[in-house]
Image (tube, rainbow, N blue to C red; front, side, top):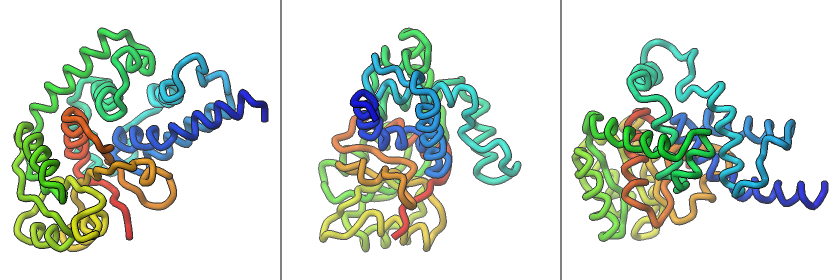
Length: 270
């Protein structure tokens, strides 16, 4: 392998966890998202020229992904049955303005500039801005739900409560520990869970979520962590929705809307 190829491989490896995060949020599934990420790597291997080394590394990788997504991407499998969560997601998707979700995720979750969003999606900067604006308007029209917050830091919990409430959702409560989360889940069924990974008394947000799902059924879950790359290795079961700390309000709003959209998510298994 030449030194140039080694450099490209290192660039891709460093940004691959974030491509997985984006692809999972876009498809609502670890399996489907990771499949698109793998297809992106296969495309680069078969045609190295598809990876534009003149662009910043992360942007170049996402641009290859979008070339595939634009021609074959389906956020929910087309062959899915005509009932259930997948069908509901497909029917809702048909009412959304094309490309708005992609632009919103690229801008908020992955923090690309509008100029970079345009280059990745092969549209101009003004259109990228318009798509994000439209996405926010369509999000505001979404049906409100109930959100459980599992977070041991009081200031962060209050901030998340405020963001969620400003979107029109109801907060069922805040839990600081795994056992507190279980008690909260018994009192009130949530439509979405926002959970930190490391909780007070050294208990686990992951364990809390898995116990809630086992006891009460599937529910959309967004994990919040300062080390997202640890949960985006592509090895074993991992979350479909993930926010990095420190987060922005736009990232939370975008992730909440995406998770609500798909109505369920694949959670980590202990």
